[in-house]
Length: 442
Image 1 (cartoon, rainbow, N blue to C red):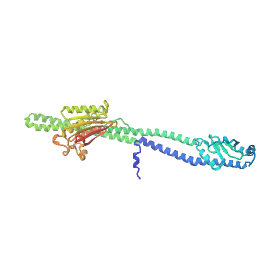
Image 2: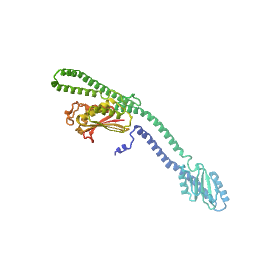
Image 3: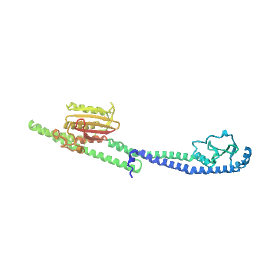
Image 4: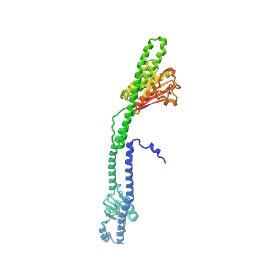
């Protein structure tokens, strides 16, 4: 038997799940105890006590004279009524109630009425006005008789006290459990927030606290974060150092080639220029998104500036849509890194196509920047490989239109991950080429 279908209805928050684990057993226990107490114990005790009173009334009825006056009837039964603390008097027929009387909060009144009706068919009506008084109206040969006595002889006094006490202490202990649970889950929530922030490229202060297991998880997270930061720093230093050191011999090559004939030096200068572009790509990849901290940025305005800069160079780039972006609304972004990523996508689109369109869509949950082109696109089975560093897909792109080392999409993916998002590649429905989406969670 599988319970996978329950996952669709179970809450996703650990706080809500823990609350259900605490509340449901308390409610179930209280319901079970209440039902068992009311239906078995309390009703049985009430029935036995009511039967005792009914037998006393039956005994009194057997002692009643068969004829005589009402005064003679009361005088004859007085010795039997006094020890039992039962008051009897004759009443007029108009004084007999039309129906039984019972308060809606009287838990045991229903059982009292049922028992009396089953054992005393001559009863005209039963009134249980409160928890201290009971009245029975019985038909006799001399007229209706009213019997009044202490209600506590029919059922236990204040039977609801157990339920009230149980509910009160159940609510009290549940509240205490909630406070304790919140204090226990708070360190876990802090760890979750720190991990989520680090996944989005933010480093927030965090120190392990709470239970031993949570402290161990927190310490492991800090060690992992430190190793990742050291790895990124070492990668940046290594690539930056290599790229920087290669600039010197490239500069010497340019100076040497400048002394040759222009016709002979042109192919060599082109090779040097391609090497310079490769070094720039290395530097961009090494910097990634770590050179600046996130700051409030208007994404619509940032895209407009990027598109305008691209248009000034004579390229066919258009900003076609900005959906859900209110004027002046800002998002925490790294503007320089995001500019580099969008410019890389636009550069790739124009290198392998003739036209590029940029669009922005923003909701309360995510931010999406889309760049589409009319080029050959990338086959679906090679898109995951295209995002990897140093991958060049000759079958997917026309390499004669431009050089590269396969870092363009890798830089974009790195920037997207640094913002807590991802780079998604697909087919453009508008232009027929590649559709590249930078999706960032908010």
